Image 1 (cartoon, rainbow, N blue to C red):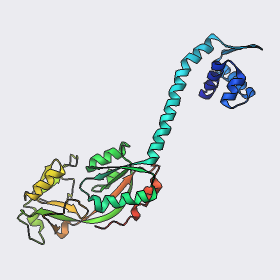
Image 2 (image 1 turned 120 degrees about the vertical axis):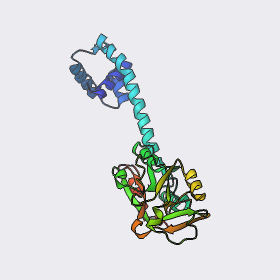
Image 3 (image 1 turned 60 degrees about the vertical axis):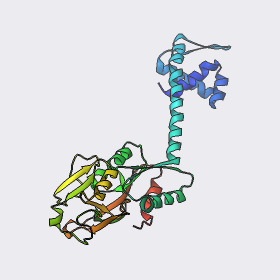
Image 4 (image 1 turned 90 degrees about the horizontal axis):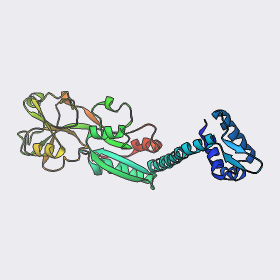
Length: 288
């Protein structure tokens, strides 16, 4: 049975008056009467008893009313919640960015640009790890992700824009044995420890697999990562967009055979309500 006709029936059942129900439904008396007749044909029984002076419910009509009033109330609440959710989605932008990226040099220019185009939109921002932010985007817990791309297959279901491509460098602390050097060789790297933070990937060598370090040390978070580098426990490989390279650290170019560029990207779902604006983020001037 058509849910719209059931709603018409319920309005008649509430008023027991076709003219009054038709007025509330903003349709003609004749159209309402015809819809009730079609509903009765679909049900195969009479739902209303009509005389020249009164309208009353049949036993089946009363049962239909009792069953469908809560159903329609639930549907109306669901529709209202959906409209509110859509309104929220159109007025709130949830942004996750890779915690290692420089906020002032990478993220802030993007947010300023979005606010200039959408001044009424509220922007919620949080720093995250790469795999966590990608999973949140897939689960519709984020609208926009700013990150680095280490594997293009990881983002294949998203709209991805390359904001800038940064050169990868070796990062060491002042206590490292390479401190003061302007270059290192692949042979030297093969004798040293490469420090990685835990990206949540089971593949221990998934980051920069072309670099053949003596061993790889995986640490649980960025704070431990920087502490290990500061202590001279090993080296890391980062890009110029990395936000924690300022301080008593040194950057050394990678050997020619290990060099590569790291794309800094933003990603979002293709059908996002703000996709037309997000697509223009590639025009933002980002300077490392």
